[in-house]
Length: 386
Ligand code: SF4
Image (spheres, rainbow, N blue to C red):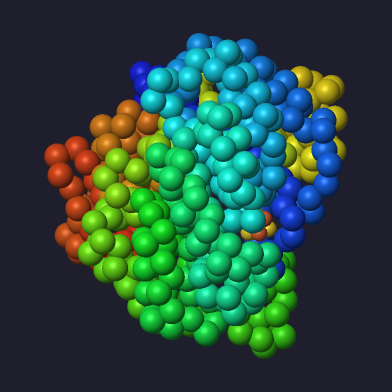
């Protein structure tokens, strides 16, 4: 492709809905989140924003809807149902569409889970983080291990796919504690595990604590050992390691996240949501107004929530596709890379990284070799620098 135009592809569309409120703000979190409050206008602003996206995207088929945050499990089942119905009316939801939500284990009373199921959700991801009570306190979480276990067990009865999201690498964690966390998640029936390394993000309470000399995360060597352990234990339990931080029993991979990693278009509504949309061959990157009040006012005034819609250059679109595609085990399509932005420098850097054993190529697919996965950011940077 040339001149920033992107040929061909009209794969199905993913829809992301950001619900920005949380019961309490965790000290490691740098997402766009706000302390929980009643905000009746936000659901209708999200619906209006969706309508505007439909006018922009034209007819597409929606393959996944994901409620993230924040804590979207604070929403009522009827609000979730109204949003899903709206998406269905606007675009049409595929018969096998994945409709998922990120849930706090505290929001897993059987009535609530039943209402979510009735609303049309078929996948829940629980922010478990750990089953170790001291760790949960250290991480500032408002649930304990008993609640986490009960939430997972109840959800696996009702939902096709249930994910346990865990954090590893917090100060004081040992391999045995991690192994116990994974075992409890598996025993509770989770068919998907997201294992995120604790990172200290600027501006968070954890960053301030570390600046004062208080340890919150383990060192890099131990973190690498813990990550190795996650892989070993989950592979032995029959999971596939389909993305850097994500493991699934076959058939339970997150279709929504795969849409990001495969470079598909996605609608992003709700405060601070990002979106990607290809219109008339141009790929746009959108960012919605960050603060809930400002987002509502923006939708009221302009009918849409995003305040930026930047056309990605061909090179930026290629970089994003490569950055995302190398995260997944099935890798990326070199045909598509060349369609987006043919670049001899990229081809040369790729050959060097394949020779060095960091990347592997099979026909037109390129993916990270095990050695490359360990230092993926570095490998990607080298590849894109040419
Ligand atoms: S519950 Fe999740 S989104 Fe909310 S503050 Fe904690 S980590 Fe961030």
